[in-house]
Length: 530
Image 1: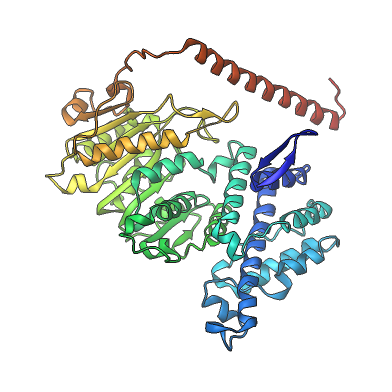
Image 2 (image 1 turned 90 degrees about the vertical axis):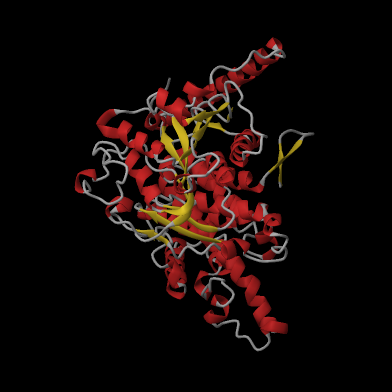
């Protein structure tokens, strides 16, 4: 935590990632967030690997115990410990000593190239845009000094995941700053957390064929670490438990986003060998054609009309019907199903229209998927969760085990959860699910799956519907059609509700005033005074 002075007598504790962001954002000046993102995240990554390098370097130099006779300047010593070797010209202390020089941009570009040369797994990953003329070198030097104030890769910092928190927080803040474009590489943390908590990827192969900056994989690692007790107590004291129980596979068509993903995974020590990039994308050039995953977790583009569907009319993945050329939703759904193992489960985000659309054969595809017994659960999400779209969204959960096992206890039922009224606004445009929201939804799903009598329908929130009920509604999967209306609340507190709404209104008005001031400031810069 960092102390931030609010007044003469008041000091407020702020997380270090918030303090760093506020300072770094001031140094951005007139640079677009989309470009500045790579400048900042690249430096954070370089600081992390430099700290990690030195942490091992001094142990090798001391030469005690298992490191007796080791050569601290041998790159292979570091590879053996899964630590990136950092050549002298790329080490943080060297770069920080040159932070005030006009050549610092060139120095950093050369440092990135040197790191890639000595670490083949990073080839083509690191940004090399620091010598560009439009990047103010004084601000760049200030950014280096700022990042240099925090230890990111030493053993203590690693254990508390400081770097991971900073990187993840900055990804989210840049996504907010970029707005619609930011959502292309970043799925909101609360949505990712909900998907992972519901899927429970304890062990096996995890696949995301549109992986963005890797948030699904990072959250899966957090899940494994948070549930160490699940592994019969044998995981205590085991480093890198995630790599022992999970293998990750990913694909991304945007090379810039793929680079963010590779760095995001590298700073957490997650092997990204099978996270691949090609410009054609998952439909035209499936990077893992033979993969059968235990878990598919994804947030594909909504209603994508530019997916080259006209070239794939006879593709073998379309077992349940040929998806329309004008919309990739059911192409993605069948791509996920194609890659599921016989007992695999998929959880993914989809446009809400996919639950009811009947145009261009989508209704028939949905019917075939439902009749095959594949649909496990549908969750209706609240509005304003996503940065890049106002299209209403939902979560699908599909189970191959329900399809392959005729005696599955939930084979002929589907769980519907309506979470539209959940979440809390973090600003006028953006809502997020709270930890309590996530727990409530996930616990409901798990209770239903157990089929031990603990699950109960809750009017207005959840309903376990039979296949016959779904047929009666012509295979429409919109949760609101099943859960009904909530029961009257006897403890409704009118005054409390008014207070809450008033507070929200005040917050929105304050934010509106800030936006007005920023608009005035920007207009003054171009000579317009209001």
